[in-house]
Image 1: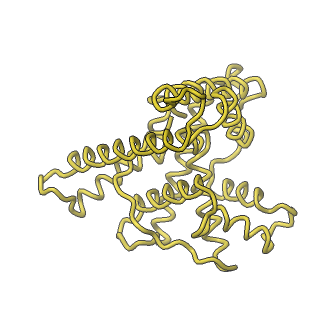
Image 2 (image 1 turned 60 degrees about the vertical axis):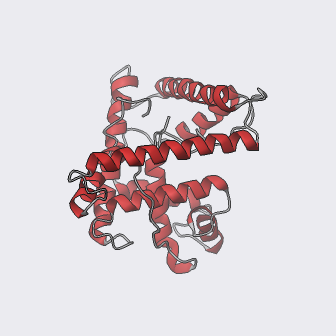
Length: 269
């Protein structure tokens, strides 16, 4: 379902653990939430259980957290929803335990494999918006990223309304959200079934360690090939390296995906 097209991943300075990291970690959590909405994060992961159950769990985890399409796409509104997810006592602030839960998800030492994958995804995202290549995002660069994530939300809302708002109310009722679930579930099942058909060599309905490693290695090779293709595409002077202008053009090309301009034209929304 997801198609990785990032050209490079470079180290970024993430917030050090401590009370002062809360705002930056919430910012990262909001970036991740905006990117993952509707697409999920673990479709290509090592799978356990049967395809139908795994797809259903994935879809329910995505759609059940979706806001009403009548809600604003402002970055601040999304940040408030992320904040509320960690503010378990509902007092409007994060206590030490709540901050620790946030650090476990987005700090420099996330505990689970899928959290490391999310961290790498955030690194790649930040590289796209680091126009001055300083290794960190300035206030202006963060503002550009936020605006593009808002555009992504708006593109997704437009797609969902065009394809699932049967009564043209401007929002999705329970039945229309069920149709979204059904469509996502069918896509996830097809994607998982294809992965199992290719890599589940012992045909036990899941990927064991060796099979998962084979899948990861293929994904790595595909990413390397895509990087080489993008480098050749944007190396307009044929020098073999991307100069500043060529890297800027590449970043703008990849930012179209952050903005969700591909929604509806590929197997994703």
